Image 1 (cartoon, rainbow, N blue to C red):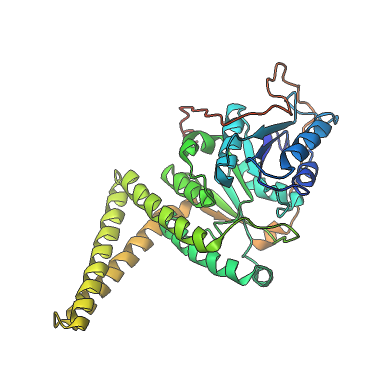
Image 2: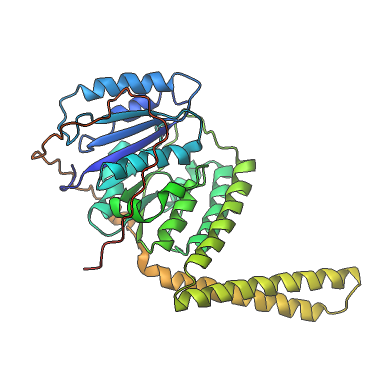
Length: 366
């Protein structure tokens, strides 16, 4: 436990033989439960998970559960988002207070876990995520193609979610509250690598506060499974879809209606100006000034929509300062826990996808 809150870590793994076992072993002792999901790996990942899980479950670490580690294997490959969704569903069923995500490739420093979960544990946010780009020196460590891709998707995610003060949306080192797992429709979460962007949109629709936590980069010998030439277009189209879905879902409020109308009017203006300009260039029309006016008006409306959208979401953005992040968080391991009897999940059980649905509602504001 951490400050009297139960803590879980979801570890998705696909072909992470030689990495995932070490990740499991280095998870801090205040974590009550680990959900380690093998997404149908083709190497020895599943065997490594099972072996490590058995060793860890034999360790004398006090936890409210019969087994600290739950090993899960998908029957078919569903992507990293699908693996994380499975872990989230298990954590929700176990009513874990705060659930973090750490990749099976070892890129996420386990000593920073208390920093990531702190805003959620303290009630400052329902979801916290690391941000690798708050410190200038981290930019040099990130490969150039990742910087470009991250920059494009960061801007598109700001538009899609309305969380304009949050950066580095592709960072997978995160923590989420039980309330968010119950209200953010995680059962429908995107299962490709863009799951993190999709989840941010769902959190925005649920009007839940999120936090940005500075986190340093850590690159080693791991191999990325992301193919950027297909990843960026695919996630961009997904962001367009969930952005339109967010506008539709939030249209019931007055400000939501205004924002939606501004976005639609702006898009129509830009499109009309572009079409008119093409016709002018090809000689079918003579109205370059009109084309520019239409496009400019459309851009102005889009800018107003983004500003208004950012304003209504700003109160739900929380960013930890770099100075605060440099101070070590206080890790409290509670020693008054009682083991829960009758836990049905053993560490070496092969589990396929589990769909658990609840009708949880947001807690009323105090």
